Length: 125
Image (cartoon, rainbow, N blue to C red; front, side, top):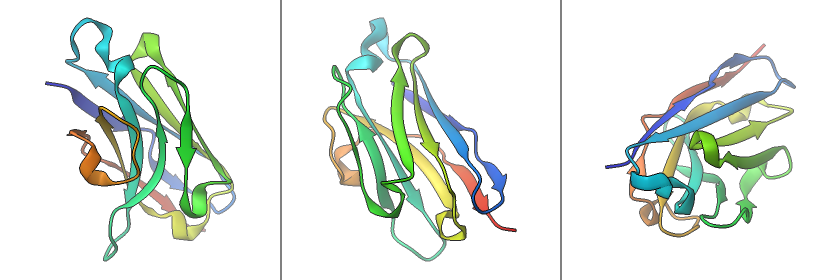
């Protein structure tokens, strides 16, 4: 059973940056590197929104939405960790950010099997 734990959230002023981490445990034999990993976010009263994903076995990535030009996704295979770097943050980026892992890179939440509990990101002055 793969378990995902997000970290790195917090409060930041508009224009600031944050790097979120998604660290996996429980994947046998280093297989976490074969999983596609995505970041989603959900603001109060809104649907869960795709932010970014990185493929398993490759470093191909996809970003979408309003963060697409201000964010980057990467992974450290040795640390079983995927990062979401977010820059020039805006108040509308305030949300709970979730990471998820699955067999293929997709923008739909249903494509991911494992989910973390989420980390809160608050952007305000």
